[in-house]
Each structure stands twice: as C-alpha cells, then as structure tokens.
Length: 85
Image 1 (tube, rainbow, N blue to C red):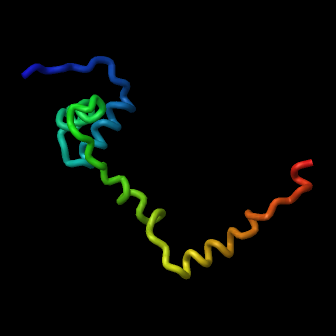
Image 2: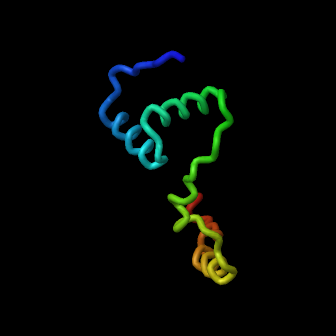
Image 3: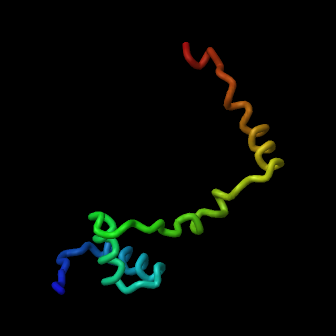
C-alpha cells in the first residue's frame, strides 16, 4: 500500500481538517482518505450527520407551529403593484 504526502496546506485548511476529523472521531489520515475515496466515487458516500448540527432549525413543526408561521408570513404573499412601477 502506498502513501501520499500533501505539501503546503494553508493553516486554516489544516485546522479545519483536524477539527472535522476529530468531530467524526477519526484520525486525520482516516478522514482524508475517506474524503478522497468518496469524492472519487471509490466508495459509496455515507450521509454525514449534518442534520444533527441543524436540528434546532430544521425540525418537524407541529400543526400549531405551521399555522403560526403561515400567519406571520402571509403578508409576504401580497404583491404591491407600486413596487413594480
């Protein structure tokens, strides 16, 4: 099995790579290898758990929450013809 060395990585990119690898509980090598494999289609891509990062913003609304949202945003459905002159 061969090795690959990456030269001249910018510090912010390296920091992001390290942080993301840590968040996925992987070594930097394992994470970089998985990125290369997935991006080249060598291995089937697994869905990264991004949903958990945004679940406070992207949850399922109750009927009451949906109704409240629709009531509050109803004004945006109106077209003011004066704006288009």
